[in-house]
Length: 87
Image 1: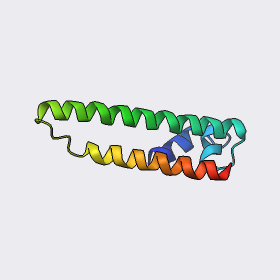
Image 2: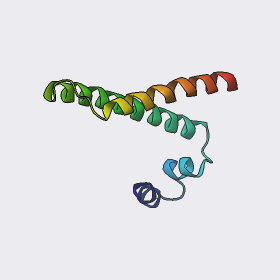
Image 3: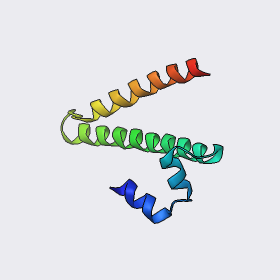
């Protein structure tokens, strides 16, 4: 729902619309890649902080944060392998 709102708010000729249509130029694709990388870093930092906080409060139980670490790590390794093979 947020993506649709961003598309409508930004307009058809904006960077957001071009990236969502996968018709962006090199600069727009770089912006999308950089935003994806920064959001991944933010997610990882929040997962680390959450795991530390949860472990401190619950006597070592980090709960669902292990899943976030696992998915992020596996995704990183697989994407590095795929991207290295493509180039």
